[in-house]
Structure formats: structure tokens, C-alpha cells
Amino acid sequence: MAGADGLLDGLAERHPCRREAWEGVGRQAGVLVALTDEPAPRVVLGRRADHLPLHPGEIAFPGGKREAEDHSPWDTALRESQEEVALSPALVKRRAELSPLITRTGFCVYPCIGVIPADVELSADPAEFDSVFLPPLARFADPALFRLELMSAGSRQVHVPHYCIGDDNVWGVTAAVLAQIVNVVYDAGFDLKRNWKETP
Image (cartoon, rainbow, N blue to C red; front, top):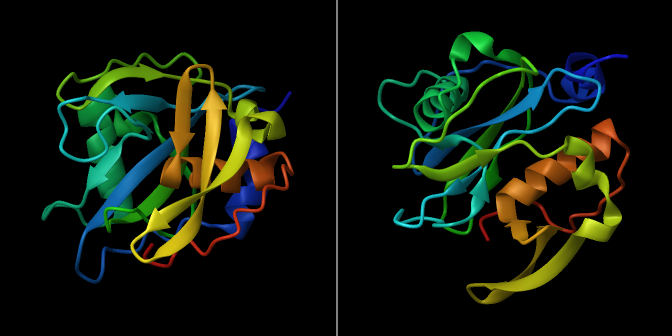
């Protein structure tokens, strides 16, 4: 059976790797959506440390804000992944890039999608993540776990995706990225009812 690499062919055709340099100004970030190369791929997620000033305790992809030495979103995503979960950049095969999404804190987040070995060993840096875990990607295609919630964003209401995974609530940009991926890979058909390029 094909692994994640083959499973992502359709996504890579729709959202190819551009490998463009960072451009523009403002709050920018790169995240790595790392999928294990096996017939039922798993996705790397972490629980952000409670002491962090932004998004404490939330479920997120490895990644972080652009630094001066980062040439591209991939540079940022790979550097942060090595720092946060000890994932060597040499183990990541670049496969796709989604369009950037805007978080509620005003960051423009660039999702970089890659494939990693199924037997990869990861460990969370306690300064960044309380834990790292790898749920099956297919779980995020289950309509019973997905919902949209109307939430306040300044003076308006916006639809925000949420996944209820056990005791965890995966939501916001992380949920939106997962929904976009499973819409292509598993034809999940989730309607996000929102242009995530708009500032909320």
C-alpha cells in the first residue's frame, strides 16, 4: 500500500512547493505539517507549554515566528521543528504548501507539508511544548469530530473550525489546516465558511 508520500500527490498538485523567500513585513510564522510515511499516516502535533505568552496549552503544529536568519517559510518551519520536537530537517521530504492563514493574534501563518519516516523519534522541548503526539490523519476526516463555532473577532462573528479529539479541542488555524488537507486527501467535504486569508 502507498504511504503518505503517494497519498499527498493530489495535494501537491493543487498546492505545490514554491520555495519562495519570505517577503513583506508584519507578524509571520511557518509551521510544519509532518506526516509519517505509512499507509495510514500520522500527523505531528504538540501541546504548547502553559507558560507561553501566545496560545498557551493549545494543540499546534511545530513551528513559530520568522527570524532574521530564515530565508523562507520552510526555513522557519524546519528550524522551529528541530528546536521544538527534535525533528531533523534532513528527515523531511517537502511535498506541498498551503496558502497562508491569519490567526486571531494577527500572525500570517504559512503551512509547509512534508513527509517523515514512520519510525521517527521525537521529543518535546519543555520550553515550547508540554508534549508531542502523532494522531492518525484520518481521524480529522471524521465528521463526528468536526464542528464550526461562531466566535467573536472584534466587531464581527467568524466561523472557527474545531475538532474534539478525546479530551482535546483542536481549533483555529491548526484545525483549518487539517480540514483543508483531509478535504483533498480523504475527500472529507468540510465547509470552513470563511476566507482564512482575511484578518479576523
